[in-house]
Length: 304
Image (cartoon, rainbow, N blue to C red; front, side):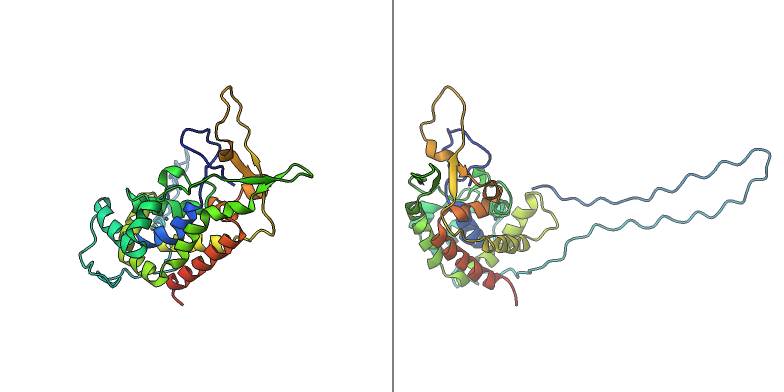
């Protein structure tokens, strides 16, 4: 598990103080989520001609074979094509052409408000740079780290809680901790999946542009989205609350918020992707509900 952090706290590798990253994968990236991949041409270099042997007739020069043409850069085949929706396809009056990515904030905000309501937008989302942040977050959910600086959502209130086993002193995630996430999970479940995916299709050219600008030219964002959704759906539901422990912080200044420094005690769990650790963190019931919504979204995204 990635420790919950405030911005003024010690930061062990990859913080995660809310399940909002998963919310971004399910809703935020669907309604508006590495390295740089380049392809180089391998130029064939012809061998140098042999020098003539002294005091001997020069052998007839063999015809030089032309170098084999370099393979052209290949673009990965699109696995899950998604057609961009026409203006107004979400059933609303929004029939204007899409703005430039840098200027998309107001239009994206209006579409989000239509989908989940103005109050929920204000409570849960970070609108500035929303599309680019959502793309980055979705991509990061299947990676070890999902940096807080690109989250498109606000943190979940209240603190992370644990309970201690009196017999052996081990700590596990407290059963009541899952209550923190229930408003978000309920919001996710209430969203009309068809409408959300319709809005995603409407905005897809901007998602694709943001994905390319973040270092993935020639890659298809919808393929990555489906890949990440599959990755999260395949996360096993734990039979019991996972054990956790505090990350040790050495220094003269005592930590005023120790609950932000928990991580999974099991190294195998701690080494999971950021998205899978978030799923384990929210509690088994919330995890099943979120995975069910992910499966529903996938059904609307992937053509049969």
